[in-house]
Length: 173
Image (cartoon, rainbow, N blue to C red; front, top):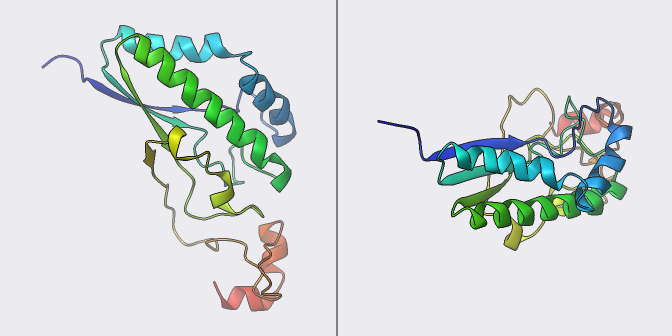
């Protein structure tokens, strides 16, 4: 009986109400600079105040998708700033939770179907910032990644449209 002792929470680290990818770059930088520390600290403290002893924090889930997440990547140039923001929030979350005697488990959660031109592994923030690796899996209505089979030189197409425009790529799907 009583309240559960473990709480999972998906932290939309890049959203800030922004509905367009182009608005997220500044928000990502603001997170890594500490501008929103009070917001994220407040989220954790609210769960702690409810008696939870373990928090499973899924920071910026499905970052390698382009379907509806405003924090999804649009280019390889965003990789470092996104990983830095993840590392910053992971560190802050653990510090705030630890100070309250609570365990924060940090989850890195890409989607299984990579529809960006960015290699998902390049987004990994590092073992010291991640406790759990999980993935969201959807039906195979899309290719698993945008590897350019037509060229087959280690490159990826920049969009699903570009990838699908070559029949050779479709054969590998």
